[in-house]
Length: 92
Image (cartoon, rainbow, N blue to C red):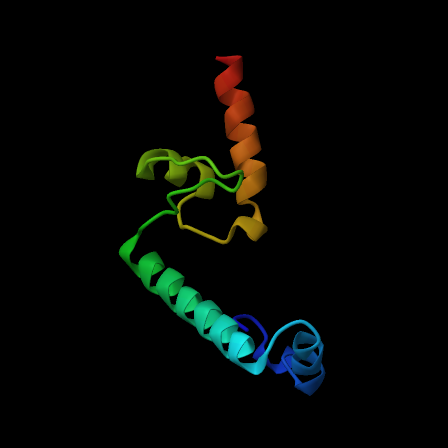
């Protein structure tokens, strides 16, 4: 939805209908849309995620070390940085 909305076509919705009702599809779409908007807005405020890609609750400083100079999706390298940071801390 966020990076390439043209990929969401009738076939996509037909596949969803195999598992979800129309109401559930609308609710899922609204949830995804709101979350994309929230995360975009939070990014402008410089907020970092409260949770690491592996699910640990962290403060803003640790999150900044994991996610880098600018918060990004966990699918774009943060998991690797989190693993590397944990290895570096364990070595100390």
